[in-house]
Structures are given as structure tokens and as C-alpha cells.
Amino acid sequence: MTDETCPAPSQRKPRTAATIFVVGTVGIDAMAFAIVMPVLPQLLMELTAGGIGVAAFWGGLATFGFAVMQFVCSPIIGGLSDRFGRRPVLLLSLTALALDFLLMGLAHALFVFFFARLLSGIFAATHSTANAYIADISTPEERAKRYGRLGAAAGAGFILGPALGGLLGDADPRTPFFVAAALAGVNVLYGFFVVPESLREENRRAFDWNRANPLGTLMRLRQTEGLGVLIWVYTCMGLSGFVYPAVWTYVAIAKFDWAASQVGLSLAVYGAIYVICQTVMVPFVLPRLGERRTIWIALCVEIVALIGFAFAPSGFWVYFWISFAVFTGLQDPALMKIMTERVGKDAQGELQGGLASLGAIVLAIAPLLYTQLFYLFEGGLAGIEFAGAPFLASAGFSALGLILFLSRRRVTGPA
Image (cartoon, rainbow, N blue to C red; front, side):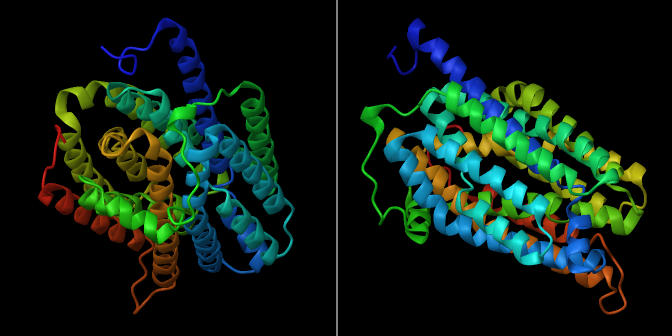
């Protein structure tokens, strides 16, 4: 066996330390993001002097601005990580995240809130760089398991973050933003003093502005053997999954009149179930079913759960449908494993930068679509008052992704 598939004992300890760092970074990053979710509508209602529908409207526009910046800048950041390494890019991204939360917590005007979102969008590379980091230090056999750990870390952040944010937000809706800024700051210090670099010198390449063009990057991804239809599946999955961070807090307040602590609890329960999926289900299910079966089964379950969310008449049914996350979280690490195996070692940063740009397009479309649907139907569009409308649209995207995935031409490998 080669050194790549069977690392020497001297390599194993650094790889373990690197995995711990990346998993910890993603977990703290997710917690910092999740801690503000239960109170974001309250802050926007304060800044706009409007109701929940108006808050959703402006929240969607702010996320659109974030996404535009991310779309333009993510390939640049990904290319820089292929040239200079993952470590400096992670530190830069985490620092921008800390400033973003601090500015939002201090904001007393809507333009300050928008500025903070734009700043964060420029440097929003934590997850894409973490994915490239894992690709650097993992053999093909290890990748799905380690991507599952990243998902588990994110889920753990979503357990602690919303619960803490909800409790803090009941007293003061701005406090969670300052706590999130502190968490991101701690992450910067941890990365600066602990993180090793993962990208070897021989796997680095010169930065190329042509490759950093977001549209050009997406075209190269689409033309890469085996990635064409998968890119569209990835897009549909992203459009579907983003319904939760985009509108769940607004829907819960409108349908059930939940306080911040109740919203935080529901998100924490979702995160706990997602962690179980990533830590238990992923290593157990993927080797037995394979990536292809895992993805289409998870998408089928997701469609059912989203329709259930749309029509949930009470909090009991919300928690019932949340339990389905133990299956729906399987699709992400399975699809990521397939895609990372379709590109070379020197292009993992470009792949993740391109996927981040694609994610930014999703981030631009999904919040506008879901928040505007919520705004229209919460106000009674054409006499129909239906706050769950965004979840039906989300189920439609999952159904489209399922159709594309099942109809694609299988290129190589077991997927």
C-alpha cells in the first residue's frame, strides 16, 4: 500500500490533531451562528419598527446581500487556500465572523446590520475550507466518516447554540450576538495557537484570477467528469435544506406564538437528532447501503418531513417531524464523498470554493423565496393565510433533486 492509503505512525498524530481542530472549528462556528437564530426576528422588528412579516422581509434581503458577497469572493478564498494553505484562510474567516456578530449586537440602525452581513459574506469560507482541510488529510475511505464528524460538530453547535440563545434572548435579544462574537473570537485564538497546516507544498498551486472567477469555477465544476448532474442535485438539496435557517423562527412565532426560548429548544432538539445521524447513522448506514441508495432514501424521507412541517397543527407535530432528521442528514456526507472523489488533490480548495459559490447562489435565492412566501401568505395572499407555505416549496426542491439524482448517468464507482 502507498503512504497515501496507509499513513506512517508519525503522520497519524498530526492528522488526529488536525481533525480535532477542524471538527472543533465547525462546531464552534455553528454554535455562534445558531445562538442568534432565536432572537434575530426580535432584533429586526426592533430595527424596522415592524411586525414579524416585515422582519422576515428585511431578514431575507440581508441574507441576499451576504450571499452575493459570498458568491463573488468564495472562489477567490478557495484559490488562496490552494496557494497559501488552509490555516490562514480559516483564521481570516473566523475573525470576520467575530466582527459580524459584534456589529450586529451593537447595531441601532438597519444599515449597520446590513454592513455586518456584507462583511461576513466576503470572508464566509469556514465550512468550505474545513471541507478542503478534511480532503487534504483523509484517504478516500476515511472521507465520508470524517465529513460525518463535521456534520456532527455542526449539529452539536445547533444543540447548544439555540438553547443558550433562546434563554439569553428572553432577557435581552442583543446578548446572544455578543456571546456569538466571543465564541468566534475564541475560535480564532484556538486556530492561531493550535492548528497545523494541512496542505503540503507539493500540492499547492499558483493563484489564478481566471480560476477565481465564480462563473468560470462553476462551469469547470459542471464539466468535471462525474460532477455535472451532481452539481444540480447539490443545488436542489441546498435550496430545500435552507428553509430551516431562513424561516423556521418566523414560522414558529407566527403559527404557535413561541417565545425565543421555545424556538431555541426546537432547534436544539433538531441539532441533537442531527448529531445522532452523523455520529451513529452515517458510519453504520453508508458502508451497508452505499452512497447512491443512502441519498435517494434520505431525500424521500425529507420530502415527507417537509410536507409534515408545512401542515403541523401544534408543537407536538413539530417535534414528531423533527425526529425524521435522523435519516435526512445522511444525504450531505454521502454526496460530498462522491464529489470530492471526482477531483484531484490539488483542486480540493477550488472544488469547495466552487461549491461555496454555488451555496451562495442558493443563499441568495432561498431566503428571498422563503421569506417572501412567508411574508405574503402570513399576511393572507389571495385570502389564504398559510405560514407553512415555504415548507411546501422546500419539499418541491427535494423532489426535483431526487428525480435528477435517480435519472443521472452513473460514471464510475459505487455511487
